[in-house]
Length: 138
Image (cartoon, rainbow, N blue to C red; front, side):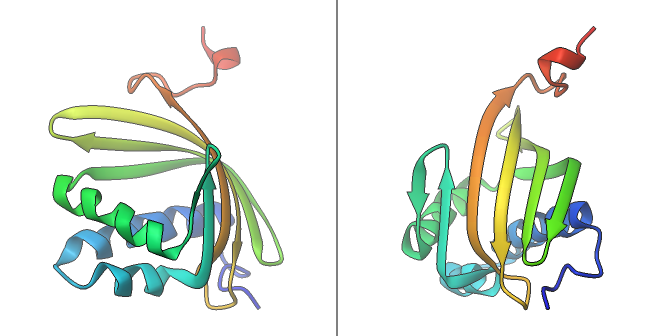
């Protein structure tokens, strides 16, 4: 039974990414250990057509640690079905005084213990001060 069965899927996905980032930046622990704590060994993430397996995900953590961005996630909607979650959220990142907002459409599969096994993400950068989709703007 997936770890998010008794959890609101929006809260699960926000907690997952927030906790992963916090653990990654908390100390100088081996980044592979942090990746493995949150991801299955056969993890595959595809973001905007770019495929990352475990090794590429570990390599991706190095610039994150170097730049030490702060971030928060606003989950706009999320649904869960068995071990899968679909969510739409905005990732707000502040790095070196620059603010970014990235809208994400996320489709993921998780292991019974809550680690990510598969993820497909479509992203787009939006103005940091206006994350509403175009149809919702005044």
